[in-house]
Length: 181
Image (cartoon, rainbow, N blue to C red; front, side, top):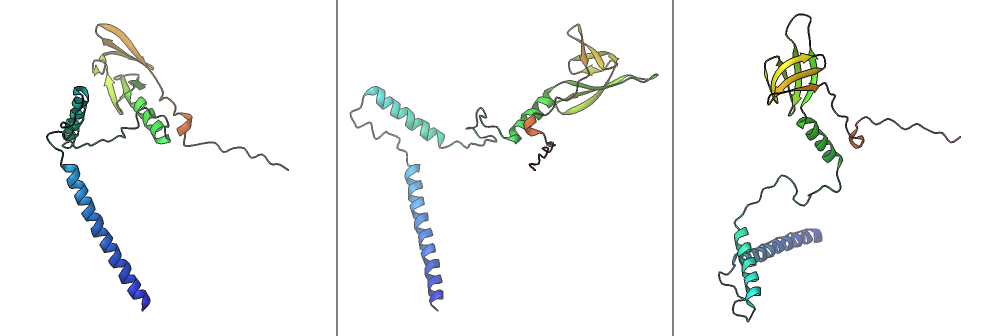
């Protein structure tokens, strides 16, 4: 029987505390919402420079109240001093996707030569005469794509994907077991 009263007492206490916190929170919110138009420090005998700084701060606070901030990235994580494995992998993927890379060339004995070029995470097939990312495809040789860019003849050679950094390699070799017999 005593436990029933104890249980009811705890529930009543929790409800009373929740109501008290809600009331306190409401009054704190009301106090924060009331930013006076005229500075309360204006009546004090302050220097012009100090009064101007106080007014600037008060204006910036009142301006910021209306802003809604939506950020995808943590603003405090400016230069990634401590980089996680996920950050390193994202940087590597971004680097690979930003490269213009000749993946392969297809040169049949009789037919149309083609070249597969990877850029921005997509692979596109180009033929001679097609408009390429950097210009117009002029010729496709084995392991090389030749194109015109601003009147100059340039080439793109076959490239592999850069290797992943050691920190993010998924297949780590097992350490050799050294037995201490």
